[in-house]
Amino acid sequence: MIRSDPETLLIDSLDALLRMAARLTKSPEEAEDLVQETCARILGKRRSFISHPNPKGYAFKTLFNLARDRGRSQARMPKIVSVADMDSEIGAVQPDTEASSRFILNSLDDEVEKALEDLSMEFRGALWLREVEGFTYDEIAQIQGVPVGTVRSRLARARRLMAERLAEYGSARGYGKDRPSSRERKTS
Amino acid sequence: MMQNNSCREWEERLSAYSDGELMDSPALEAHVEECPLCRRRLANHQALGERLRQLPPPDLSDCQNRLEMGILQKRHFHQGNRSILAAASVVILLLVGVWVALRPASHDSMLRDYFDDHIGIVATQDHKGFLSDDPKAMEAWLSERLGFIPNIPPWPWAQWKSARLCAIRGERVAFVQLAMNDLDASLFIHPSVRHGMSETASPQSPHIAVERGYAAACWQKDGLEYVLVAPASATNMFNRLD
Image (cartoon, one colour):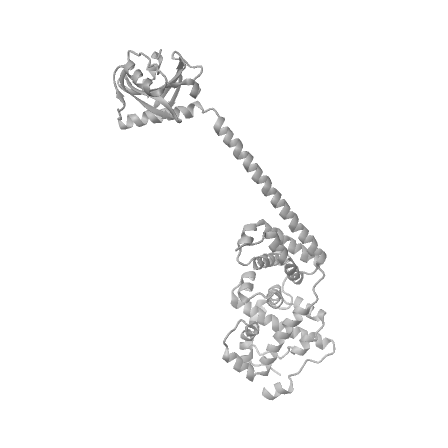
């Protein structure tokens, strides 16, 4: 297979890396710094990058590792939920607190961004990689260095948490939580 | 409305199903058909993905430009480095090649070849070539084959055995076998100009080296270079080379 040089491959992925970094950090400066370090790390291992079967995934993996290391060094804990907290929820009967799809589609950008930011880095990353960057579960597993089952679990929980948080924001704005439609009531 | 436990159990599969990562799941589809909450969740997943993709991208164009510049600079630096490294490698290889071609062979490294030949012959008791106890006859035999006359020293104390040709560093050398007090010895003779060894040594004052239990005496005389290799215990004979 003929490949471009590593710099060209990296520049092709730069936009996506910056988008991801912006979701993993608190400011554009921090995002730029993270991507810059990612690029330096990748170009320091040019052969590994160029010979990798999925260079874009390799770049994201590097980005994630660095973001995680930074998160550890800054002792940034997940904001809303930890995996331990989530595990304790399994099987528990929870009230229906999720917003409806119509509600989600009509939510404000700020609300969606805030709900996303409130997720832990792992959940946020998995959701972003899937929904925006279009990576498969296998690819996300490689990027995040976890089994596919964990990716599946992270995505399901991230989605539920997002829906719940958007419902909360809607309530705060004075919108009542969407109730099940008449059809839903009929069939439940 | 409270959701039930069974819906929680479907949660992960539902999420994977909405991502197209769960194929052929009639049980899930049957459940979704019956369960309004899961139907809503499925719709939520699609809405959430759509909403995330609609988020305005953060204005990072300046960052991107700076990063691109940085990456391109690294490429130029890398290419520059590669060119410099390639050029440096060529220069180093040339220098090494020139040095190897032109360096004078060290005395000891050249002597090692003589030691090796002598030890090899002694170890194999290989007495072949032109067998004779007459140094003049051996000289004549060698002259015909070498292109120069190897003036074999007329040592009365030597017991001459044979003559042959050998190659030292690609050059033809006269190789005479003899015994000194019943100890096997080898005398190598070649034009000194070609090897440049022992310029200042003479039969009266030979250059002597010892290696692996053997001793070598080297000297020049009449445009020829001589190397006599014998057991180290025979070095007392080296003062009789004149």
